[in-house]
Length: 89
Image (cartoon, rainbow, N blue to C red):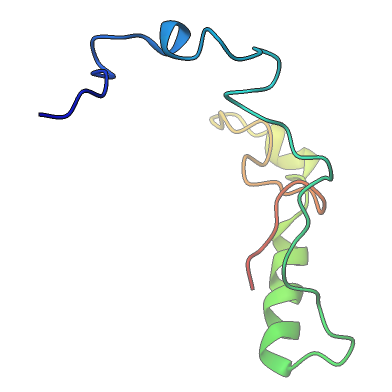
Protein backbone atom coordinates (compact mmCIF):
# COMPACT_ATOMS: atom_id res chain seq x y z
CA UNK A 1 0.00 0.00 0.00
CA UNK A 2 1.02 3.61 -0.47
CA UNK A 3 2.87 5.12 2.50
CA UNK A 4 2.04 8.78 1.74
CA UNK A 5 0.49 10.69 4.66
CA UNK A 6 -3.24 11.30 4.64
CA UNK A 7 -3.81 15.02 4.03
CA UNK A 8 -7.04 15.03 6.02
CA UNK A 9 -5.40 13.47 9.07
CA UNK A 10 -2.26 15.63 8.93
CA UNK A 11 -2.72 19.40 8.84
CA UNK A 12 -0.91 21.60 6.35
CA UNK A 13 1.08 23.19 9.14
CA UNK A 14 2.47 19.83 10.23
CA UNK A 15 2.96 18.63 6.67
CA UNK A 16 5.07 21.64 5.67
CA UNK A 17 6.66 22.38 9.06
CA UNK A 18 10.19 21.74 7.76
CA UNK A 19 9.87 24.44 5.07
CA UNK A 20 10.16 28.22 5.54
CA UNK A 21 6.77 29.80 6.17
CA UNK A 22 7.11 33.18 4.46
CA UNK A 23 5.00 33.27 1.28
CA UNK A 24 5.09 29.52 0.83
CA UNK A 25 1.44 28.52 0.63
CA UNK A 26 0.23 31.73 -1.02
CA UNK A 27 3.15 33.21 -2.96
CA UNK A 28 2.66 36.74 -4.24
CA UNK A 29 3.39 37.51 -7.88
CA UNK A 30 6.37 39.72 -8.54
CA UNK A 31 4.56 41.80 -11.14
CA UNK A 32 0.97 43.00 -11.03
CA UNK A 33 -1.46 40.95 -13.11
CA UNK A 34 -1.91 42.35 -16.57
CA UNK A 35 -4.69 41.83 -19.03
CA UNK A 36 -3.71 39.32 -21.68
CA UNK A 37 -5.73 41.16 -24.31
CA UNK A 38 -4.78 44.66 -25.39
CA UNK A 39 -7.27 46.85 -27.16
CA UNK A 40 -6.34 47.51 -30.80
CA UNK A 41 -6.36 51.10 -31.95
CA UNK A 42 -8.67 50.26 -34.86
CA UNK A 43 -11.71 48.80 -33.14
CA UNK A 44 -14.54 47.00 -34.85
CA UNK A 45 -17.95 48.64 -34.74
CA UNK A 46 -19.26 45.93 -32.43
CA UNK A 47 -16.46 46.54 -29.92
CA UNK A 48 -16.92 50.29 -30.13
CA UNK A 49 -20.66 49.94 -29.54
CA UNK A 50 -20.08 47.77 -26.45
CA UNK A 51 -17.56 50.28 -25.08
CA UNK A 52 -19.97 53.15 -25.69
CA UNK A 53 -22.77 51.38 -23.84
CA UNK A 54 -20.46 50.57 -20.94
CA UNK A 55 -19.36 54.20 -20.67
CA UNK A 56 -23.01 55.35 -20.65
CA UNK A 57 -23.89 52.89 -17.89
CA UNK A 58 -20.88 53.87 -15.79
CA UNK A 59 -22.24 57.03 -14.21
CA UNK A 60 -23.76 57.98 -10.87
CA UNK A 61 -27.51 58.18 -10.47
CA UNK A 62 -29.00 61.66 -10.90
CA UNK A 63 -29.42 63.80 -7.79
CA UNK A 64 -33.11 64.33 -8.42
CA UNK A 65 -33.60 60.55 -8.29
CA UNK A 66 -32.22 60.45 -4.74
CA UNK A 67 -34.71 63.10 -3.66
CA UNK A 68 -37.72 61.11 -4.83
CA UNK A 69 -40.06 60.07 -2.03
CA UNK A 70 -40.26 56.29 -2.26
CA UNK A 71 -36.81 55.35 -3.57
CA UNK A 72 -34.24 53.46 -1.53
CA UNK A 73 -31.53 53.58 -4.20
CA UNK A 74 -28.74 55.88 -3.05
CA UNK A 75 -25.96 55.02 -5.49
CA UNK A 76 -25.21 53.06 -8.66
CA UNK A 77 -24.28 49.58 -7.41
CA UNK A 78 -22.95 48.56 -10.84
CA UNK A 79 -20.39 51.36 -11.04
CA UNK A 80 -17.14 50.14 -12.63
CA UNK A 81 -13.60 51.44 -12.20
CA UNK A 82 -11.53 51.34 -15.37
CA UNK A 83 -8.51 49.78 -13.70
CA UNK A 84 -10.07 47.40 -11.18
CA UNK A 85 -12.90 45.82 -13.18
CA UNK A 86 -12.55 44.94 -16.85
CA UNK A 87 -15.32 44.39 -19.40
CA UNK A 88 -13.94 41.11 -20.83
CA UNK A 89 -14.64 42.00 -24.45
